[in-house]
Image (tube, rainbow, N blue to C red):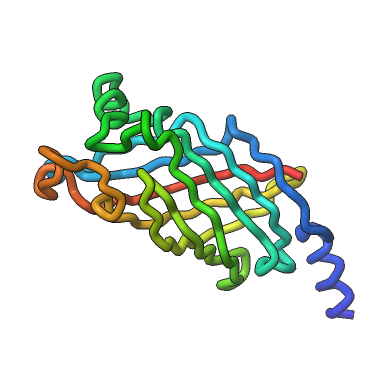
Length: 182
């Protein structure tokens, strides 16, 4: 009886098929925190595209691809946004997209997964491991959320006069919330 109840409960929250998920962009976000002169500064990206093909019952067969339009950066000021688009930072004219492509997704506990893949920013590709938490939503779908750490110098972000880590820290705290709908 317990086995049957477990199967029935799992079928209520687990999709029975792998499918591409639609993203509710109005309720999704990709953000970051970086320290400037040791003061945390928050920002985000206004435009991004996510392809998610995922079945919680078979995570190893899933795939996430995230393309961020770096010209859509939001630092909280027009001046900051313009500076971030310049060659010393994201060089948005030559490298308009930052792209993450998962290579592997593994279960790491109930509702927890780890995606490993490659992140490309400014033409530089580095491996990235991203913890992912999936929370079931009503009437359906999932909230995919997580945090990850980057070193800006790995991608040549903030060079020239901004290279000094006492002015702008090397550590970037990335954060995301993606509302995935069937």
